[in-house]
Image 1: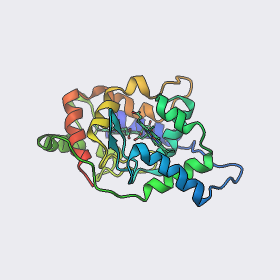
Image 2: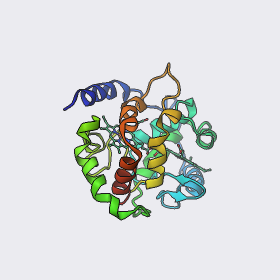
Image 3: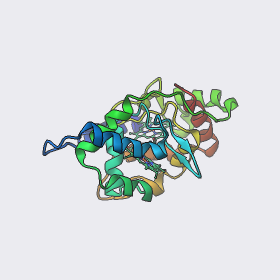
Image 4: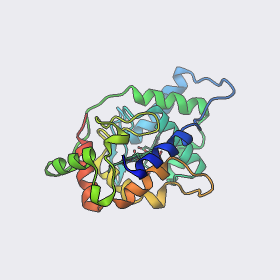
Length: 211
Ligand code: HEC
Ligand code: HEC
């Protein structure tokens, strides 16, 4: 295991301990949850499979609930900057955030696809072996051998390739924007930074077609 990976894993062990909890016992009725998920799906797709409009809306189906809650809170705190999702998220109660993240975990539509298939073999190599010369650890070591993620490590399987490309090339401008409130985005930052655009395209093509 390389040093960066050990450090990153240690950092995560500290950082994942800040989940959002409903402190006041708030609960969400099935009707309230349905109204809210219907709203989410106008952008994220009817089965949470993602959607390509003027820009890609990420897949939420099968995503790790802990990761979804962390991102909703990051949008609210503006540690992760996105004007659309700030507006969506800042009205959500902690109980609703939790209910939403559990709802999307249960959905399992097929991947939207659309990535150049010929890039997938190189992408698979990067995913499974990393890139030793660039000090990039295997993606599988954190996102799991099947790319389904775990807890605060997001699922990548079936995620839209163009969304992945935009997120990895924009990492420094969008994530971890409150320097006094460090979060899990710091674990992924050096990896996003060390990948070339061609390598990102390849690994995005590979994971985006995984079920
Ligand atoms: C008006 C369109 C729109 C609506 C409605 C919407 N979203 Fe989003 N959402 C987006 C966009 C666009 C992004 C990608 C932001 C980015 O590029 O960083 C996003 C990103 C996210 C992410 C981060 C995903 C990831 O892989 O990191 C989560 C979680 C999320 N949305 C949850 C929700 C939930 C839950 C709802 C309903 C309460 C919702 N969204 C409603 C447009 C929308
Ligand atoms: C040391 C652990 C680690 C390794 C190795 C790693 N990641 Fe990540 N990755 C993370 C964590 C943690 C997050 C979530 C960051 C957050 O919550 O802000 C993440 C987030 C991401 C995201 C954003 C997902 C989304 O839905 O917006 C992408 C894309 C991603 N990683 C791709 C990769 C790729 C490709 C590789 C291999 C080249 C890789 N990761 C290797 C830990 C890792």
